[in-house]
Length: 135
Image 1 (tube, rainbow, N blue to C red):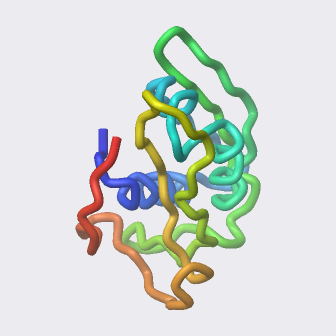
Image 2: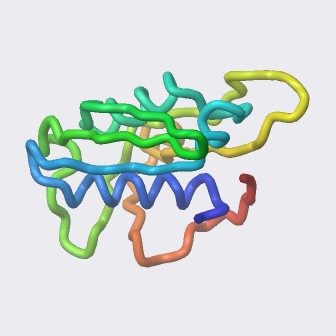
């Protein structure tokens, strides 16, 4: 489990970038990361999927897990890139989506050109510049 929300986003984007059009991507997270988080809920996961050209085919919640099956819709913005370089992504802010005591701080952040207006590329095999921790 990655503790840095930016690295989580980088890992998800890298995985989506490796999937060919029509291919499948499976995601499994602890159920509490989605249903008890201040920053992440099922609608946010849908927005992440859309941003990464993924279509949700199936969602299942078990007693402890949240499971998704995604299908790659196109390679237009996240095609194969040598060295698993991730292109700039549309930013999804880490805003509070659910208030209340007892909530966890799990989130997945995608950094992109819309957020910082830079055309930087992030290498999956290099550490992120920030060190924010939150689970």
